[in-house]
Each structure stands twice: as C-alpha cells, then as structure tokens.
Length: 343
Image 1: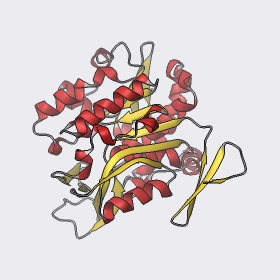
Image 2: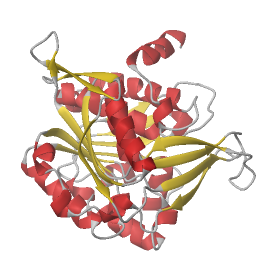
Image 3: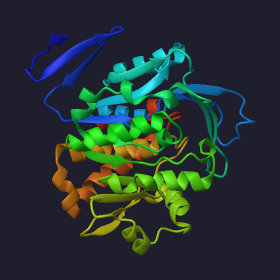
Image 4: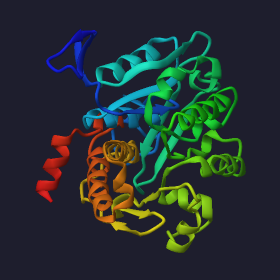
C-alpha cells in the first residue's frame, strides 16, 4: 500500500493496475457466488443453437460488488473460488475493478462454477450450470473473514448460497455477524430454479431468511414464483412486508420498478434502450441503490429522495442490458448521466 494525495485515500497496484479507494467511505460487503458466464456470440438463440460463446465473469453477489465500485463506492466480496485458472482470473477481476478480495478463499478440490446463459428470441433467459459441486458451494464458517464482515455498513447476499451445506451454514453465520455489528442486510433472492432440488425447496429456503433483511429486491418473475400471481398486486406486496423491512423493491424489466415502505409505495418508470443481454441488470440496479443508501440511509424514509435514487438505479439496469455479459456491462456514473441527458 502506498499513500495517495488524501489521508483518506490509498492506492494499491495489482498486476499493473492501480486502484484508488477512499477509506472514508462506508463499506458494502457482498456474499455468495462468483463464476464464469458463457454468453452466446449471437443474440436471440437457444444455447443449443449458439454458434459460439463469449466468456464473461459473473455471479450476482460479485456483480453487485463491482457495480458498487464502478459507481465510486467501496465494496468487498466474500466467497470461495476454485484454485484453478478461472478462479484466479476472477479474483484478479475483482481487484482490477476496485473490489476488496480479502474475503476470497480458494478450494483445491473443486472447480470454479460455470454458467451458460442466453437471451432467447422471446426475451427470456435460459441457463445451464456446471457446479456439482463447485467451489462456492464448499465455503465453510471457519473460512469466513469475520473481521471484514463486521466492517460492513451494508451486507448483501442472495439465496443460491442456501442450497447446500456447508455454504448454507456459512451464509447464515455471515448474516448473523453482520447484523450483530450493525449492518443493513440487503437480500436479492436471485432465483435460479435449475440449481434447486425442487421448486418447493427453493421457495421454502428463500423465505426462511426473508424476515431478517432490511432491504429486499425481487424481480416480477420472482414475485410470481413466491406468490403465484402473474401480475404484481400492491396489497399482496405490502403483505410481504415484515416489521423490520425498510424497503421492498419489485423490478419490472423494461417497465421500471415498484417500491414499498411502511409509509408509502409507488412506481418508477424505466429508461428505453435496445436490450442485447439482460444478465446483470438487476445486479446493477441493486449496486447503485446500495451506493446511495450507504451514503444516506434517510432516503428510505423520504419518498421524493427514494424515487430519485430508483430512477438512477433503473438507468444503471438499463445500460447493463445494452452489452453482452454482466460485469463487462456494468456502468460508471458518466454513462448513467449520459443516459439521463439523452432521455
């Protein structure tokens, strides 16, 4: 570490890349999986029809950590990778994008997870996973960097790490430690049904930690899965609020998002863009939202401020759909401002 111009700023050089981080900023820690997404070189085809694939780093919690960093926030990732070329490449990508990798560990006996992802002609995503077991599933409680987790102002996670042991116990322990240290808990279930033993098990486990979160974001498809309703009903959404939940968000794809708090609810419209690949759009949305909450938690209680923040988050999600892959497509603030001006 070498000191930079400000007492609150440090510069670290890794693989020839210098990362500047503001130590005065509050930390957002993301927990869970990081993997390699393989995205077809041609849009609108099934995985079987794809003529080739573009290798892209991904995994929802890692995407969120990098989304935060791209927007000037301070983030860290906690998870396990295979001790293989892909695993070390992914750790390097975190560092190159300004994300702390202090919470990353490697497994010598399991590979880094792979996922093949395509956006079909009907607009729906199709997934095929290679993780049986992958390294992320084998993270144990003893491997957690508890000191890093205790530093988090916001602790963000999904549900994929709940599928199997020992990662499930590690996930629950990390949540407990973060909560006890005063962190805001942010939950995006990020449903991937092919990974679960059954739909019933997925629903049960997703809901098993629902009441511990302070902020929850679900997609319209996840809302349908959890409630059985094909359209988002405000009364049902409000009924999903628990006493400690400060904000429930339901993203609606190219129709924007809905927000619910104890005192108000409403809708924020989307930005119109030409979508190429929707992978990572929800993670960009979440990352940008957490960046704003960590700066000023009071936006959760002020509807006008919240709507401004959600408009920014919608823009981040929209920009991410205009490029292939998740992490390569995550925007910086300059790109978001350009979209605002164009709109």
